[in-house]
Amino acid sequence: MHRPDPMTRVLAPGPRTVRARILAPSLRVVRACILAPGPRAARAPARSAGLIAGAATVLLAAGPATALGGEAPAGALDRAPPPARSAPGSVRPAIPLAQEAARREIPTGCRRGGPPFRTNGPRNKKVVALTFDDGPSDYTDDVIRILVREKAKGTFFVLGNQIPGRERLLQRMLGWGFEIGDHSYSHPQFPSSGQLSITRNRIRKATGFTPCLFRPPYGAVNRDLIGRARTLGMMTINWDVDPRDWSTPGSGAIYSRIVGAAQPGSIILMHDGGGPRGQTVAALPDVIRTLRVRGYRFETVTELLRHRFVYEGNQR
Image (cartoon, rainbow, N blue to C red):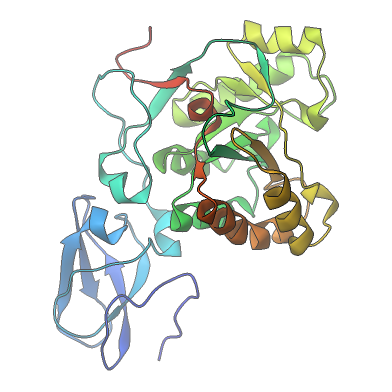
């Protein structure tokens, strides 16, 4: 018998589990065709199932057709095609997470305003932004799976020299409602305009999205660097919660430092690249669950700052 992946839920009761493949090209209806013995198939609205079409392996119980429930299986994130770009439309807030994947539009940029340097959002609402630096890396898939499963948004500040070969990973970030920011090309202190511009252009070439946020390496800022980012259309973003996960202090310490310091409007720093990040991955689910129990919601940095994404056809 095939052993279930721990990230995958057996979606219906039955005497045995079998492997199945998602065949439908449409996110509206996912058709699960049983590949192991068993004649039956299951159909359900993708939004209620939380599934995404693609060559993904999931586990279903052999039995009657059933309304599927539960989060997206890990394989669906790994191999699903990114959602198609929307037809021309208006500027509007990003659509919520996995339940609305079938309807989500991919932004091409954002409208920003206010000060060119921020470390937090407004303090009057229990909303925080989870941010991840130094990727994309082999750990980024794990972070994305957790965010999707927990229905929390994240903002990824990526390095330009880590993008080649991971372009589809960046596309999936946007497809799930996350945000991508510029973290320079190779992580020098006080990077040049060229460092910022190369990464900005690589993000845009890979995804069609022009980043509006810049995260300075090491958090080191001065007036000139903020000005260089602003000239390229980006706001400089630091943080007010730093668990120092880069020092690998243990998942318990990362968790405690985040939940102990988070407050309304916090921008929380974590890392999905630049070193071994298994402790960050291990701490992330409990961070999200604890803050949610305390009444917090999770938004991208652009949403936290009350700016708005721009979609194709409306670039003003």
